[in-house]
Image 1 (cartoon, rainbow, N blue to C red):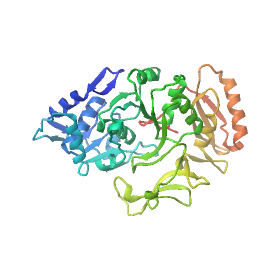
Image 2: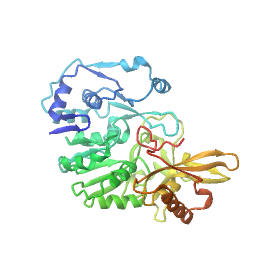
Image 3: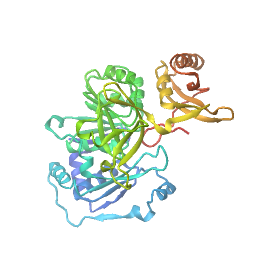
Length: 410
């Protein structure tokens, strides 16, 4: 049974290979800081199996960033020495041992740093396994892996596959031209990714993929028109929208762009007077505050049925001529226009208005810039007030994103 396949980098590891690597491991890095994804996975699995705490670091953290995070150079050399080898006979023993260690192992991960310096959160392995579904019905799942493995969403998909001995096909940061071919070649029936990934994936591969049976969205807000495109692309798939964060882990699940607070979380999740999603600090990975409630800075809109949808991050609101503008709202409208593949709306200082809006747009190469700009302006004028309409439009090759694929607005 294959464990991990990355065709672009020529990596293919079976569960037997992984078992040998875990058995032969004499020491384990406490801080995983490498661009070698095979080493990340083996070190991570060995840590969970032998019961050692582990810190997951992005391989592209600079020396300066590490210093700001409180990680010293000597920390990167800390190793746990394995005194006794169990000589594991089969991978089912690894899974059983990981379950046994769930309450004792701590996994440290960092936020994406979208709103500043990344923050460290420490979760027990039991929290990371909380929403992992281990059952016979999942034993034949094959995952298209489209997340950064050192961040929460990537860890969740990784553990879901690992604990069911599923195969993982790596799609993260790979050329999308081969993505659908890989899904079909390896009979992938599950895929989890950001809305940005799906938007670009579906544009690149328009024909149906009938093999995928389970699709999850996460990491960003998305529009229901993308949900419809995903349903057309994956006609036989169950589609779920997941609300999760580094701070609290997986929390909410929905079938469209809205969420309902489940009964068991009614006293732990609430909407503030400012329409911010608030999480009780007892759910945090590490509680370093005396406050009872943690502000996620996600701004929500309450629906008539009591559900809510995520509008944007609080930092996505800027002042234009005395009016507050939600940048994510403007992006949602622009994304409705045929020919627009991706967009980032930014603010630029202006001597008259304080700020003006600038739209950076990645377009379909078959569309002419001037014509597409007219179409965009027509839709914006129909859907939004004048102060929400960008004053500048730039057509770009790529939209800048951070380590987890989220837009960088600067």
